[in-house]
Image 1: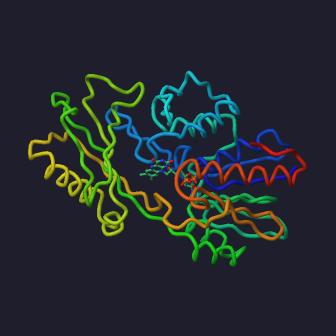
Image 2 (image 1 turned 120 degrees about the vertical axis):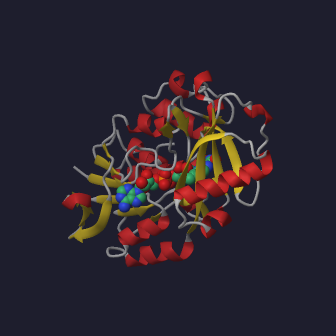
Image 3 (image 1 turned 180 degrees about the horizontal axis):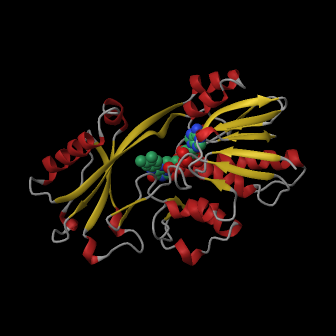
Length: 316
Ligand SMILES: Cc1cc2nc3c(=O)[nH]c(=O)nc-3n(C[C@H](O)[C@H](O)[C@H](O)COP(=O)(O)OP(=O)(O)OC[C@H]3O[C@@H](n4cnc5c(N)ncnc54)[C@H](O)[C@@H]3O)c2cc1C
């Protein structure tokens, strides 16, 4: 039986694993994070759900999974406009796709080696996985480049030279219940590109929890302050908001999260890279551009190539 390993349980990796689930191949996804979904991530703090990566799932991607997996539309398709927001957080989208697939979380891949024709993965805590026929990397480009450097140095070099990603700090904050957030108009500034009203998302509002937000920092400011502490970033962002909204702007709590690879600056401009004998594939949103749609499209195109190699029809 063909053994396929996918590094990364973001939307791209899950799209690939889901697309291959009806083949005879044994497909395993490895991800260093605690939950599937990658940058389509959520965090719950004091009962408040924050989507601190992508804020929602594009319609087209959501519909693909409703027809092709066990996801039920009632469960999470509440917003019928251009995007969908799963109840309980965007991360539940990844969780529901991963359900029924073979996905190992908290599994950091430290290195990829060759053993004859096969691949061999070294994981944290001295673990390893051998006899992999096909290896698919969906991590951000610099991370993938480091992992393939030993086995496919040319691909590693190409990744390093052609693709750039920008970081983003995000600050999750909550304000006290007694203040009406409708009066707060958050204007973009040099520091903050947008502030998302998380409490207004489907199924979230609870009168006892107040209002909660995600402030996304500009890539320029995030680059400049990349190595600052989360506490420092939180304070700087809230000071920026206070300068606009007044000293009495009532923040109850805040938390900063750093995304080292948040968005694509320079995509490679093709759906994926692969080695000569098509046993190693490198893909992710950054191949085509930015966002979940790009991650999904890149992933689907790898699925189609692999299905063709296996002698199956294509998958749209
Ligand atoms: C703040 C922010 C705002 C965003 N806003 C939007 C938006 O409005 N609209 C939109 O469409 N998109 C948005 N995005 C982008 C969107 O989240 C991404 O485009 C998409 O989720 C990328 O999916 P992916 O599978 O390609 O990569 P990822 O989600 O990054 O998945 C890669 C996975 O690889 C794993 N990994 C990396 N290295 C290793 C290793 N060595 N071992 C094991 N696992 C590893 C990571 O843990 C990760 O889970 C935003 C992202 C951020 C951070």
